Length: 390
Image (cartoon, helix red, strand yellow):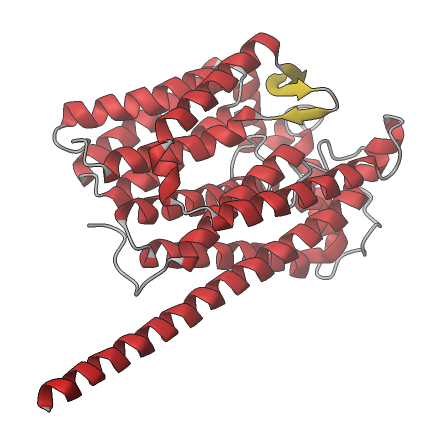
């Protein structure tokens, strides 16, 4: 009799725990959807305003970039729905192929890439363009998480650790620097280090590799003239206000003009060719000008919520690969947003990195939404929270 009561109690407890976990997982998914939907809508509104003058000037039409971005939203939604249904464990099986494919595309960019703004980052397929560096972000995260989760001795000794880091990050970084795309290189290194940390890398190894990466970043920043100009523009924008500091100063002017509540949607002055790259890298300045400090803080809050939700997915992942994958994707979206906003505000050097889900860019939007779908799949499989670092 006692054993039957115990069995019934355990079954009831397990059912309650399962129902509670299911409700929590659904809540995370719904919050993710609400946050990203809001970011995308804000991005579409900002794109209409920021890109209209460029479209007219290039004789594409006032709404050319808006309709292309809307196409990106539709394609991205389809990709998100697909990736949210694909078990994320499947990516571990194809991690090497995904990484090699990304390397091949990055190499192809050097041969036949389309140059935009002084950098060859695009592959053109008829009217469509694709930026392979977007795929490279995901490929590096998946490969690093796969190697660590399979227990291939990545952390057995310093030699094994160094070999993996150099092989993965060195190959991708070398190809990206040739484009050149320093900002994406830095972002990928940050994401890889987050995966390593969550994967349990010894802190002594990480401290050493972080110091080396920082040294290389400084070296690369000062040996290339255009990167050195960006650094000078960051450190002393008023020293050359008509050239290296011009973009940052115009960004400050736009943000200052917006004040607390903004000048109103569609009323930006900066978009009239005062602020370069207003619809891409500096769209946050247009948001701050049109909907003010309140609107800018709202966008930042949405990204904070996105990062918190991503971290919850990582903590609740049912396996170590899922923890690292979710943490890596969260770091990708979070740090990319931080680097972009930091550049617009003058807190960091300008890198050319766009604002996820908001800046104009079809390929980046589609890949970002696909990555979000992977997070949603992880949320579906979530269990009770566990630590993400062993």
